[in-house]
Length: 217
Image (cartoon, rainbow, N blue to C red; front, side):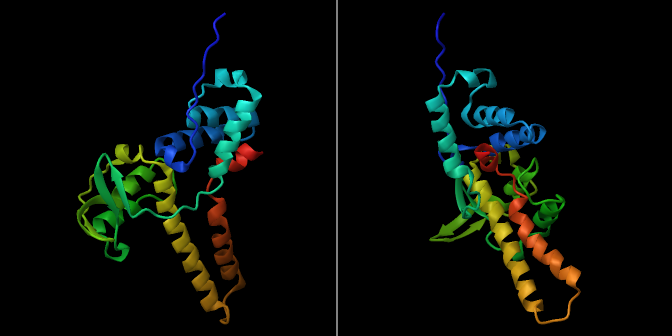
């Protein structure tokens, strides 16, 4: 009986994982969150291209190597924002001045209840990142928002860029919450309000699903 060779493409960073892969993985993990074997099979399938039926064919050493490689970066999603990115040879810039964002862009982003990486995230990214018109050093201007959604294009972009953009807002909110708590420390405020603010700051990082934690378990 002929031996089938298995070729795995193991990602070594979030830049090797597309948004499409990440969303498909998250959607399936939710259904199998109590099944460790199924979770392992799903991660190797979506991130490495290994079909579940071949999972038991992997040598113990190879399995341990892949597991170690994934664990080396999956635990850290707090990545820096990349203000300028290149897709298909075209440079796109992150909205340079959020306070001056057009009403149309603001309205289209705020129609989504949660600012999190889900099925709507590619649309949000296509609003925040637009083609660069002029650039000089670190300064740049981008095209005006025209309502066009380039979601298919952003589904192919690496998760290092997506997490960088997400944590830009997460860290912004955390700083805001800390500032609010600090300014109200010496004032008489209802204890429930303070607890809600503190809890919000603590829950934000934990609300982001981490496959690394699942893989380690």
